[in-house]
Amino acid sequence: MSSLKRPPVWLGLVLIVSAAWALDPEIDPVLRYYWEHARDAVPRFDPNVRGVSYEFTAKTYRHTVAKDGFIRKTDSITQNYFYSDGTLDSIRTVRGVAKRFKNLDLSAPAVFQKEYCLNLFPNDTGGPRLAIGMWSDSLSERQPEGLIVIDRYQYFPYSLYLYFPDRSGFSRFTRSFRFSVVDGYVFPDSVWEVATRLGIFFPESYRLETGITDIRVTKMAESTRP
Image 1 (cartoon, rainbow, N blue to C red):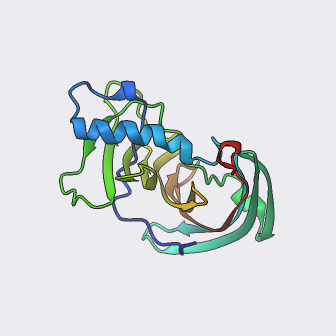
Image 2 (image 1 turned 90 degrees about the vertical axis):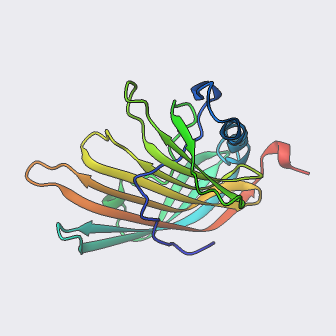
């Protein structure tokens, strides 16, 4: 798999692929076309929805960040994940202390049933990658906002950038994902989380960086077998 890279600076933006009823009837017909096709395609590429068995290795760095922005402390962990029929079966820690990473989450948020306003970015080059922005209506519940980049022709996601405006216990919380296609399924290959957690005496800022490698499908979905 490709190596872990830093996410783009536009972390305050986010993905969007939601249900068709979330679309404004006056929405650009080109955006409607890509939105609906991506909405329908994503479950076909999702190994958990398809009931696929698979495994991978995840190496995570947790950086504690000081007020001046410099890293004060770094912990790391390497773990093997095993999924059976689309459900997490077990995690084996290869190196590091698991209790320091007990809240580690590598799953992309389920944004598809949420309602958003959408827009296409104005500088679209017409290339294979298409960026769709999304934001919440100010009158509704504040959902994570940001940007999704999809394949223009097959509609699976390349990357996802999320900003959570109302994350409980945090003054700032962003999550970003990069995806790869393995055996016809889409898996995260890099996950970033940048946050400032509220504390009793002072806030704590940290950055989580996870690289996912050695993704291996051990059992395909029944409908995709020869």
